[in-house]
Length: 364
Image (cartoon, rainbow, N blue to C red; front, side, top):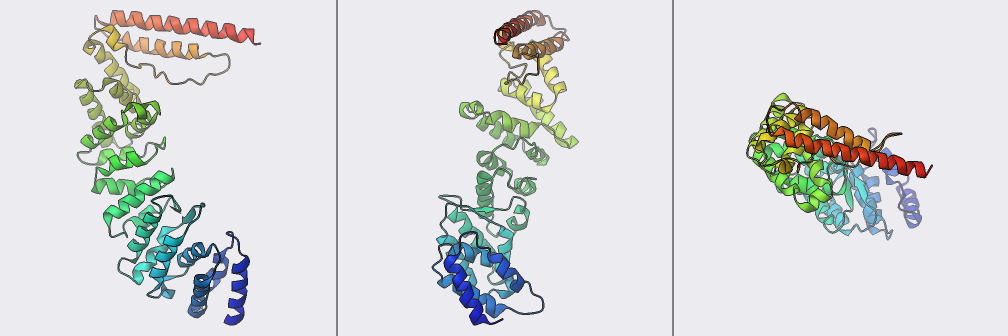
């Protein structure tokens, strides 16, 4: 209650405080007391922080402005916050709720946009400010500079895998600017969760999807597995029936153009077994030779996880056997040499399985 005594003890705390000092415990009872106005006391705390030589003063000032309600802000507070953001230097990322700074619109028309621009610029050389994963919807629309808002979004996507995890903001951006989908794929890491396939709902999204498929088809991306990850996210588990039909038409059109056929079959595999099998049958008549037909990775030759008493050879043989049953459904005369080659693959896989079992016996 005595501001002089309170200020004295606060200065003592700052002299000894480590980075773990919890400013919120001191501020919340004052900032959110409905019965009293603590404007004078909060201003005193702010001024002590500004004059402090504590190495964490800028971190504490940023936290101060995150906590204090808009009603306690004055005209020069925006300038102080922007300077604090510019001056903050630390090897530790500061996790902030950016929506806590929307109140700066109360003292300046573009106050919040200014704060977000400063945070974005501070993150250029090294990510120092990380935003909440689930609050992009809250702040994105409040930034008056649309290019800045998108750049901030991509910057956060790049530094944290689960930012905007439900991708609601992402979908709103893509609806307004479909080419943002390309920028997103360049910046983001595949989540292994096919949520961006809702982009199929956007009118004329097909050329954008094709641009992405071309981009991720590079040998560098394919070797790292990035290509197949994005193909999976774009073409698997599509829930909406209209989107499902749209994606299916896209794959079939690609197949009919005989365009990047290996990738087209991967898309079909991610989309559905039925479409994959149907196109595999149609391709028997399209392929120039049995050798060209067998260039496709028909059995998804990715690393296998084996069960007890099961070898990699067993799994490969089983996959080829399943595919053989598909090919045998064809009525084309061109199926016979292909069937022969598939049986050869089955035999080699079975031989490999026997060799694996023999080696296993030697180590028992």
